[in-house]
Amino acid sequence: MPYLTRSAAGTASTGVGLGFGVPGYAHPLVAPLEWGELTRPATPLHWVVLNVADGPGTRPDPRCLETAGRLRNAGVRVLGHLDTAHGARTFGELVSDAHRYLDWYRTDGFFLDRCPTERAALPEVRRTVTTLRALCERGHIVLGHGTHPYAGYAEDAEDADQLVTFSGSWGDYRWSQAAEWTAAHPPERFCHFVHGVPRGHLEEALRLARWQGASTIYFTDRTADGGRADPWASLPGYWDEIVSRVGTGVSE
Image (cartoon, rainbow, N blue to C red; front, side, top):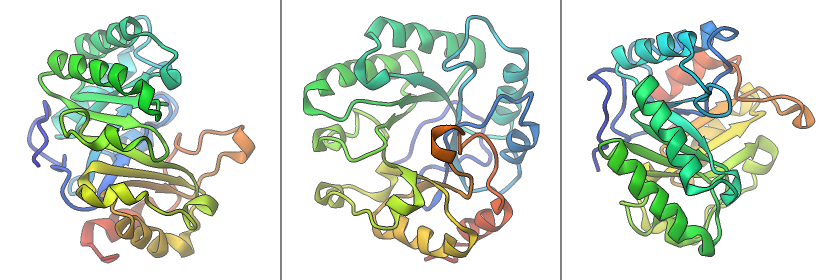
């Protein structure tokens, strides 16, 4: 299915074929190289998450405004980071954050981080997604579960465009298995985020993503360092190599 975007035509992918979903780098002030790499022509990029200050912050951030503008001009789809706190944050809080992202950064959709996975939370998540779509002219919505949720989260394409069904270490990913219900859906519905992937295992990791039916990925050799570090904050050391591999389809 083609995904609607508010970005100009450019490098943003329609979601078909293997490509990158970037969970969000460190603030542009401390990670200018990372954000700059996302505007490189022909990078197979599906979307990038903008997380200003665990959300949109309390006022527009000049550096983030500039970065979001450059990404939008390059055709990159930018998603605002909304932390659901596993369902602890209220509907009103999430919608308020969404308004700030749209008003200040003109985001193309939203990434619902720490999204609930259980069946009981599904009606409230659907309510939130329906409201976000109305606010963002049917913008791109990603549910950041980080694991396989109750199958109902994927039953209706109107609920969300994509689900993150894995987010974790390479040690866990290489032995993971996709839930049986995912086979009923196309790969463009699923995303995998994996940290600690050694350079020598990149091909294996890319093949595993394909076998498990995920078309949006982000692999990095950075690690969580026992929970003390954010593995997504900076570029992987092999960024050029993985961009080339994904862009040329050598892992197919």
